Length: 256
Image 1 (cartoon, helix red, strand yellow):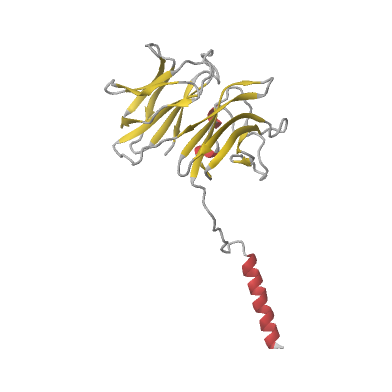
Image 2 (cartoon, helix red, strand yellow):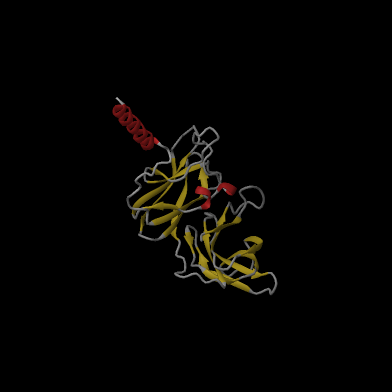
């Protein structure tokens, strides 16, 4: 009888171990070898969740544990996943922003199709001005081509143009102490991104200008770039406005 009791105890212990929430699980399998970051720069666009084909890549949880219907909004909430990259396997994808609200839930309003390569980084931008009647807004993807090695003496900065009613623009960085001005690559057209350019460690005033013009289009002052880091400055907004939440601004994000 004691032998049967001992066997029962051992079987119960094994069952409890198997059900223990901290038990080691088998997570073997290929890890995503590419990365993608998501931005909602679509003027007046509703909050969205971002998808790769039919796989949801970003979402916002609520205090109840149920997915929020707010989604990733324009402006301060522009980057999805807290501004971090999401892992993704190489292949061809259609990226889209889909409405997060209960009305028109999961309706795609932007999309871009691109082939993702092994080991590379990308950014998907929902951009331009939202067409409320058609329920559409632009979308595009740029590859984030980082320097192969980290240079701890400089930062690397690039410019992405997401304003649909603006001409091609060049981003300039002016050292606030020396007054020296550096062009961050050349002119960048809408739905495009420039190359990463090295900037010495300093405090900068940023501005964009159209080709052959000395007039600043968008300005952002007192921007610090830390050496060894990689940054993107994105132009977003409606160029016809000078004030308000959707007036043109230069958005700052760290890529690495």
